[in-house]
Length: 394
Image (cartoon, rainbow, N blue to C red; front, top):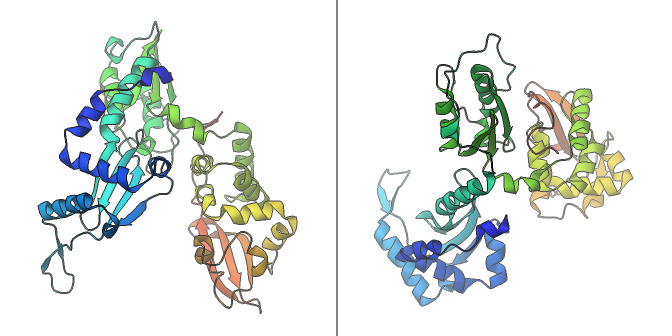
């Protein structure tokens, strides 16, 4: 598979055709070492801001030219007057996966002017998708155009549904056209294309429905083999990062069924110590609590390694704040979120509760006399679990 992604000479030519992109990439190259560039392109850290004063004379000229060309204005809230945006004082480099999320893009953000993509992004995504489709088509496979077309009818009985998303619509396509559909879809995380509704397929042709899913914004790979329609997310090659063993999913669903929506603290401590951030995000489709675990991973890891801390977290009094210092350093984002940096903070305890909005996990910081100082709530809205191992299962 790796051999199919050989160097494509059109990419550097395409980048070099833009003066802006060439100057931006030159600035990126001069500011960072090879190892630092590699870390930025891998998304770690999430972004690096550099003062314009640190740039070379050539790069400072580039920033000034972009500012001069933009002629950007902002509205002064107090007066409603248009004011010219000041010349950028910093430049930020970061990587995100826009669009379908299957290709990274390096963005360079000039303070006050916004960010533009400089490498990767849509061109890389188109090229990768084309090559993935070529690699995915095996002898005997046929494209959408070869699928026997038919008009879709509405199923005689309503389909069980988790919402009008791609899973539901594919089930309707299968029932309405009388064809078997096998799909490998992305994890249903918040904002995922899986949660978008491609529309009611009733009355449409089978081929038209599949072409909708093959084009933007869905962009699934689709083929047919021996009468079976096969659908795959173009980012399937990245999915291994979020794969969750089915045994873990099964235990999680048992925990949710027994507790009414919040896993037990021992279970949370275990998954925080054994699963990756990507796996926790995948499980977040079943309970929002899991998608936030990475924020307090060190706290739950401490509870897993020290049974006394786990026991105290569940007690009416809580864990003495000094005993949490190995996991929650003063000034850290986690310490600030929970409020344990406050001078009066003496104990931290965790409770599973039910609120009008649904089950919640409450982190309660109390004073020495036991009175509550601050409570941080993680809500777990009730939802319908996906059937079977689901996306990301194994």
